[in-house]
Length: 224
Image (cartoon, rainbow, N blue to C red; front, side, top):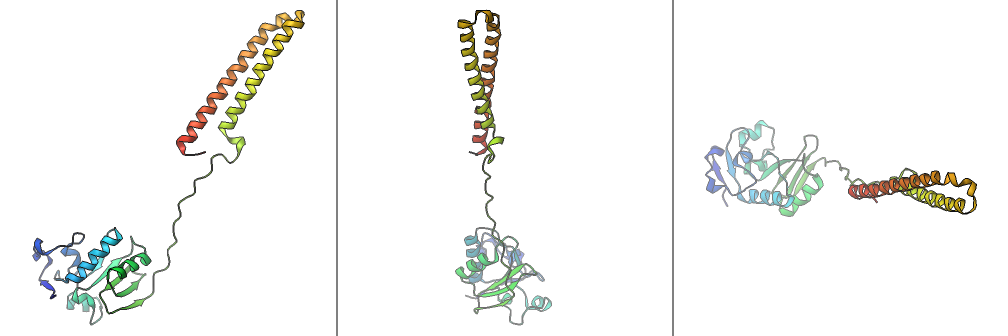
């Protein structure tokens, strides 16, 4: 298929452009505004964009012969045929990008890690330049265990307080009954013991409330 040429990318009719994730301005010569539409190359570029599912930042696509000389391009650069693209790696993992590019049919690869882009073209199969350094794979942060130290657990503190207070209230009630049955001389103390028993009951209720709150709060935070 013979490539279609335009003196300026603004001259491209909408009906002639069918690559939704790219515009004529992105593919046109940066120095002159001229555009050569190489449909097989653009089809593969769009297929690469679809496969990766994220934007491709095109640093350079078609170059007019004059602009190619001005930027120091190779004398027979595929850019002059509209069959080469320089893609920024800022939002891509270079290894995954290269694998996807090969899968959709790109054959030529140039690595420019210092400039932050990768050259891809339709061939012949070859590669040059220093490969991009491996990027560290991010791991999902591990959720910390809820309250490794039981002494700091609100659930344990609340439950412990409730338990102790309940036992205290029961003990006071037993003592109160024993005093009432066996020690008539200490009967004036019985009302005070009754007050103490209710105090223990109040503490137990507070402990139970703290325990329930702590459990609900842990559930909301996704902790055990």
